[in-house]
Length: 212
Image (cartoon, rainbow, N blue to C red):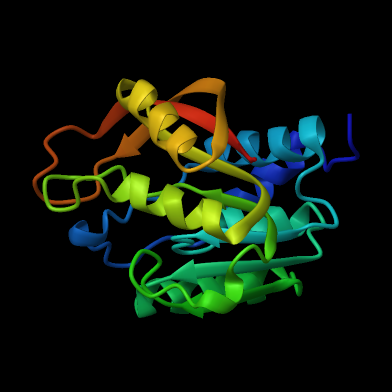
């Protein structure tokens, strides 16, 4: 076991983080629930020691929940990557409100415009990528490909349980060994006008990919 902030305290920090003011459906902007995000990050640090003292990237960082959580867990530096300027504005506000200093962010298209200078720069990449709607089919695997390019050690990510065999096959083809750490329920709140239910539970896998 590695040193780690208590799970309850980590979740309390994530509960204080502001979310998207006007989420954009084409970017599949949904909040990572504090309970889920806290458990992910707590597992990453307490079981594997992959955050404390590490150089961490958060791909598609949105409003910064996973980035801030990693900073609270004493990452040496966290860099969030996000395409949306509005989300990054909220990200910066959250960083100031949470009073964490070991965070930076980069505005870029993670899939199409990731700067080459970040190749193999990060010890750990964490992400809750878009799962891929009919407009963005396959984007989750494109995120994974970029994450494995950036990491010199390990990637942690969420993917739909229904795509597990495909995810493992893609990871293997990209030179990584994938392992499902947990099967989780992603409580997706009603976010857009076309949502008819208050919330929907999606079965997701929490993966750890070790770069070979």
